[in-house]
Amino acid sequence: MSGLALRPPEQVMRLDRLGALHQCRLSFMRTLTRRMAAEGWRFSRPMFEMDARGVGRAVYKVETGARVYSMVAFAHDLPDEDRSDRVIAEAWDATFTLFDGTPDAADLARLEANVPRQEAGRISERELALSRANRSTRLWTHVVAALASGRQPDPAELARVGYLMRTTAVYGSGKFGAADYATICVRPEFSAPFQVEMLLVYLIRSFVRDLVNHMARARGGAQAAALAPDLARALGIGNATGLGMAPFIVNHPVLFNNWIAARETALARVCARQTASAAERTMFRDLFARFEEVLESWRSDHPVQRAKLADLRADYAAARAVVAGPLLEGAEPWARLMAWADGALSLEGQECLASLILEPFGALVDDLTADMADPGEGTFRLNGSMTIGAARAQLAQVFGWAEARDWDAPEEVARLWYVSAEKLEPRLAERADEPLEPYEQPLAPGREAARAARDLALWADEETLAAFLLAHPEHRRILRRVQMALEAPYGEIRDNTIHAEMLPLDMLRAKLSFFGATHFDPRSDRWLRIRMYPGAPYPEELTHENCDFWVYPERPA
Image (cartoon, rainbow, N blue to C red; front, side, top):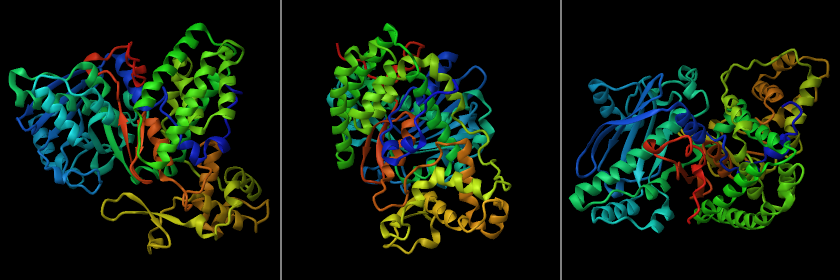
């Protein structure tokens, strides 16, 4: 597939475009559900010990064929006034861990003493991830009351919220003592990024459904109903995500490059197709029509997101006639569709179509998921023999936009990133308002690049980078990133991450789109809520036929 026309990083890696990305068939949730179905993973619930208040513990077991994993869940009776989405919370309605193997009685006792305490507890390398969740209080109360009386809850109320519980964190990759990713990435089921976390959330969704049914039976007895399968299937798991996630894509440039490069390569492969078969056109048009259900259920009160949704709805209306028309019957249909979108639609509409046109082409693009991890993370070695002339040229190619900015202007450096001492989470401050510069994190590569360019300009082209760095070791980090960009061209954001008008939401959405999240709903410019797995089959329903397109709801008859 060499020679494909990929969109250039200068176009793709702008924050406003990254903040318009949508889930696609390469997203991590869908990668997982396809694998689970293809490999025939077996699921069971060996333990469900809950009292009438919904307090107790449960174990959900997964057998992959080669290994066994167990989600251990603890449910609590949390007073309404203690329920919070803030990362500083100390109590939750439910807490979870994904355990490597089958826990015995001693394991369960140890986990029960520690998992409900989350960061304050002690977990081991046998635990692969840690999470906690809170009920959506009013909807939970409504659903339990309705089921207890023998009737189904109001579908409109379910659709409005979209989930019965939302997680406030899903921690993996060695955090708080959990197994380090390097120790498990050699397992095929976890070779793609974030598969541990996605598996835990998938199992949490089953637990939430089972718990609400249990509490309804405890209240209503024999007359109680179980949540109807179609209503349960439409519900996802909510998630409240804040600034802690945003710097990830700056701190992992090669990994983020691999995500973006996979999507861009997939898009280029599809756009290189000379014709579209009848089956491909039919599938695309069907999923395009089904996306309207996602769009209709996607709401937000945040002004930025409301404007984006207005653009997307207008884009969808404009695209409907084009998708139904003769364009797809002609030569190079997908390239022509994307060229039309670039000139006619907002970034939201462009990136929505970019995701949708991948859908009929699993056989063509799904292999790219194998290259989305970064097995050599942290091992890149700076080449000190590079000449100053070559370093200057490469820096200008990647960070030319930054060299052109006035970094003495207050608006260019209005923000700074630091780490909260209380929760060890990244935070964003207004530079002029808080005396935090001594604690500033290196999360402004553009500013670093401009400073390096200024000093490089004083050196002769034939000098080596090694000599320069002996004199200027402060530039080693950014020049290492510049060299990494030779191999990872999509690893650098081509925008100022400390500008006064920078929206952290753009970074959050970029990362979450690769998770497979939908229904982005900002609650401020620094945190948002999403849905995970809405429409997905539950473990007992999962088949090869329904493991992939669940993200697009079936249209009502």
